[in-house]
Length: 152
Ligand SMILES: CC(C)(COP(=O)(O)OP(=O)(O)OC[C@H]1O[C@@H](n2cnc3c(N)ncnc32)[C@H](O)[C@@H]1OP(=O)(O)O)[C@@H](O)C(=O)NCCC(=O)NCCS
Image 1 (spheres, protein in one colour):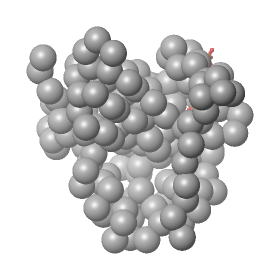
Image 2 (cartoon, helix red, strand yellow):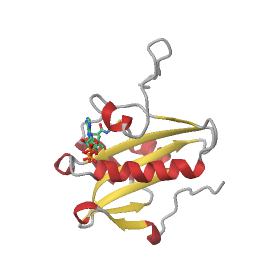
Image 3 (cartoon, protein in one colour):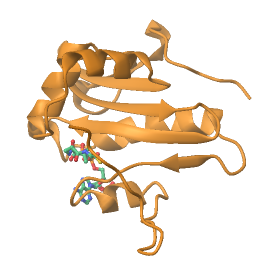
Image 4 (spheres, helix red, strand yellow):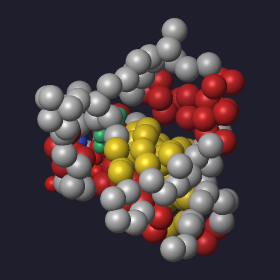
């Protein structure tokens, strides 16, 4: 199985809807923080973000006129457990198919590294379950829920 981990590679640029380019590349700390803040997610320290972004398995940015307007990432161990994270489209650009294009790239990456019984998980934000259901994700049953803790 060929692993396709993140590298900055101009050949992985494509223009999708409305002149938006999708570029498979690492995100800079500042652009990640800007995207996160724009959708109202709580602040994470720059140092933690830098460590986190360095550990991506896959990352894709959506750019319009040189500005980053969206992103998606995959983290995990690269074979057994993969987690889809940070699927973000800036609010003025939502509802135009950009999130779908980002997820299509995520799924292509996941396909390239996953085998039988690889677990691909995510935590859906409020109201976003139907978006992920389009990609075959299902909600865990109430008697086997996902759990998390936010460190403070
Ligand atoms: C969720 C998000 C990434 C979707 O991006 P988007 O560019 O607005 O989505 P798209 O326009 O590509 O929509 C793709 C499809 O999903 C549907 N969809 C998008 N957001 C949805 C939502 N919140 N609820 C239900 N369906 C949704 C669209 O109707 C569309 O359906 P279609 O293909 O049948 O027409 C974007 O709304 C966002 O950044 N939200 C804030 C951050 C967030 O919560 N991210 C998810 C983290 S778990």
